[in-house]
Length: 374
Image (cartoon, rainbow, N blue to C red; front, side, top):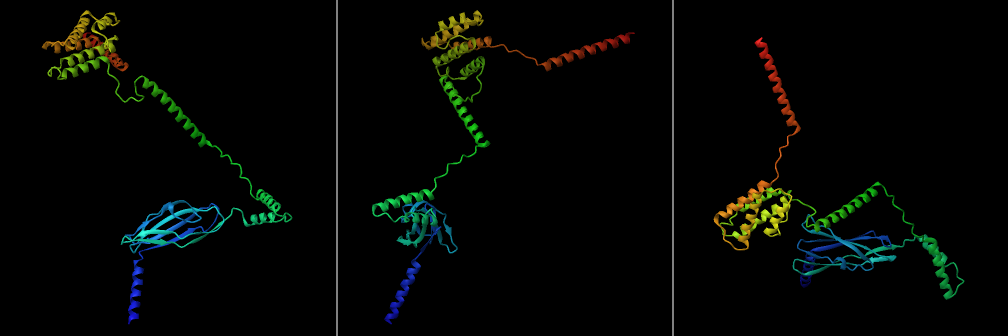
């Protein structure tokens, strides 16, 4: 009875250990026979429960004689029974001939009880061949063992010379690199690159030039308004402002004077923005632009009033504000370019045709009246 009980407990333990195994590993290598330096795909596939966490070693894996060139992790695959299949691929190689073994690889994982377990792969034998064929090695062996008359050091020297002769005979130099023919696409590519470089150089030169001028190489702003339109627009904005109602007389007359001085520079062609009132008036008297005495007097009055408010801190009279602004607007309107109406050839032709038709109608009407009178 005791033996039966012991056997039952042992069987139960075995079953528990089988069901506790919630992950399995399988390894493969392709190809298993290579020449020196060839790449081998070493694949590790783990089938496990979803709650299992695999700790892949990455480049830190120990593969004995084999050097890890690269690795990748494939996407997990869900199997029909709900388990997960994870695949890890190493790309390895070796540079020594002979038979070598990819040693058992240990992969750690944590099970549902947060216990760390280890899975180990089976070793895989890899055969690494030389670049030289068996016939080539047989020739080398025959040459090195051909002369047995040497003894001691002389024999070693003779064998080394024979080996060097064998290598010179069997191992050929690398061929000279062949020149790739340069077709039409090559020259088109060269031309495109050259054009791009030229465009970059020209763009850099233009950028430096415009930068010195304080401008941008690309301008997306609208074309500037004519001086008279800009001045009248600025005066309208000044009139709509609340500077007078807020008691900001200095700001009001400063802007008024600045708008007028800017117009004098851009339209009349005299320096005014950085000059005093007397210097500005002197320039106006001496300029080539024809200005009447009334217009000159208005400009002087506007600037004098502005100077009194700006510098002498004069509190202006109530009627000064609109009157001074009106004088400035009137000066701009009197000196703005005259608009000329240009008639197109088509309009002139239509007018000539209408005149001719009227003349013909009059002539026919006169002839009709003359016939009726007869």
